[in-house]
Each structure stands twice: as structure tokens, then as C-alpha cells.
Image (cartoon, rainbow, N blue to C red):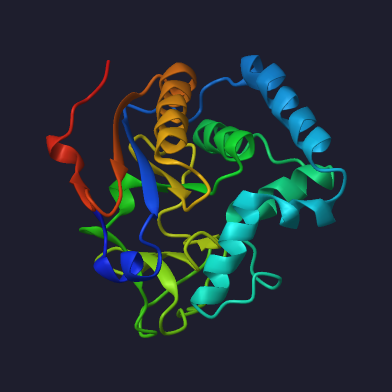
Length: 241
């Protein structure tokens, strides 16, 4: 599988980065009860960091994403980046765990580092995945939806050879490539813009890979993409054991 960041992204966000985990031999039905203490610890951390939902928007990482959303014509009060939305769900006392092990692993990383994290079923992806600006003609069916909701021209999207996989960079994922208990190969993506550093992105990516290996029994490949290394073909990347 090949994934790339197109030049038009770096024209506006020169320091944008992606931490990628490609996982194979995934058991996405694995027992996760042993992960409960880590989940509670990270939820407690969120509640200590943010006294209320209004405070979430003051975090430097969230403020950066709000600026990015405005830069491509999106009101961040109407459309929140995935890490802000997830943090707010925790503060509201809503259940975020138990969708499936892969999602539990990446939600943990998202909350720990306050960064957007998502994932796709690699076997449902068509061709190459690109992070790019939308033309407005692409097809998109949101998670749990059935109707086409095409992106706005200039919106930041992930798209494969068939349609949009995620709109507004990290706002809403597509239904076609969602992670399910039957997923055995997945691509997980951590997204960063300053103030998140390259070193922190590397740390978070390695930790996500370790969680997926531990809890899903998977083998993983990892990569960091940025302006100096904008694409990866995971068929040629090293597989960890």
C-alpha cells in the first residue's frame, strides 16, 4: 500500500507530519479487559488537564488544528478535529471504548498526546491513498451513512482511487473502509502540525505500534511522513516481529 502527502498540503502547512502504522495479522476481536486500567488512567488524566469542555479549545494542540481548519475554509466550532471531539466525549462521560481493539489502541494514543488518530481497513482501500486538497467532485459516504456528501473545493481530504476516506483532514471517516472486528490488515494514522514536534510524533507512532502488537497480536511496519519524506510504500517497508 502506498500513501503520500501531496505538495499542496505543505504549501500551507510546511511542518505537517503523519505517523503511520501498517498492521497485519490483526486479531480485532481480541480480549481487551486487561487494557482497562490504562484506559481509566488516560481518562483521569484528561479530566485533570481539562476542568470543562470549554477548556479543551485552549490547548495548544487543539488551537493549532482550529487554525488549520479555518485555513481551508472550515469553521472549527461547527466541525471539530477528531482529537478535540474525542476529548470532549470523555469529559461528558460518554463511552469511547469497546468499538474494537484497534480503535481502543488509537483512541488511547489520541488522548495521551492530544493528537488526531484514525484508521482504515487496508483490504478495503482501492489503490494509493493521498492526503490532498479536494476538487469538490469526489464521493464521500460518512461512517454509518448511506448518502453522498462530497467535500468542499479546497478542503483537506484523504482519498484513494475510489472516493474520499476522510473529510476535513480528520473530522469524519468513510463507512467503506472503517475498522471492524473482521479487519485483519489496517493502516493507522497519527496527524500532527506544530506545536507537536517530530520527536513526539515518532514516540507516539512507536507506542501505537507496540499497543497494536500487544493487544491485537499484529505485526507492524511504521513510517513518518513529512515534507522531506512525503510518501511510503509499505510493501517495501520493514515488518517488525
